[in-house]
Image (cartoon, rainbow, N blue to C red; front, side):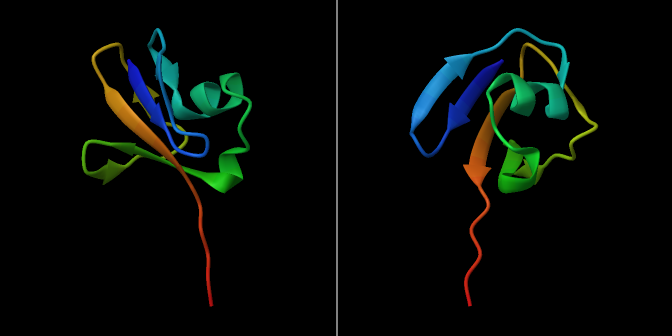
Length: 64
């Protein structure tokens, strides 16, 4: 699958299938601090991603 990361911005190729939780952990990220988006939809941490998926991982940003 193609993975587009922000902060720092980079693109990776990762073999699937993987659950979102496994992907985030393999990239050394904290699952509580990122959003995983497939197409135009936010995916939950228990969903399975496949080789043909394109996902974007963005940091959670809060403001006030």
